[in-house]
Image (cartoon, rainbow, N blue to C red):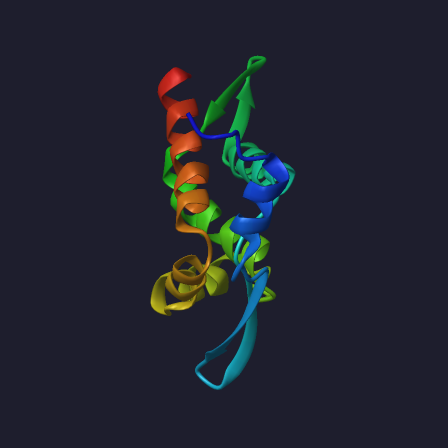
Length: 128
């Protein structure tokens, strides 16, 4: 059997060609897109989505599933890019669903990580 490959070597190889941030020309505007979130940042995004979509009633916490997609898109755009979304919910909704901004950001970010964020939320809902 071959010698064990050290974690330092694996990290060095994994880092080759890796870009932390890319610049993307989005309809004439240069946006910065993060390719990857740290594990802690990923957890914060998951918890933020769940907390934003939850309400308390008689001491129990309930998730409002109708809000999940909108809130997830909001959090993913905020976490992975320098795009500022409006505070006004209707304007934000229009941007997230009537433009390609979410698709562009999610396409150029780590799709496995975004899928993990979304599947973690779905698993939480199934457990609840």
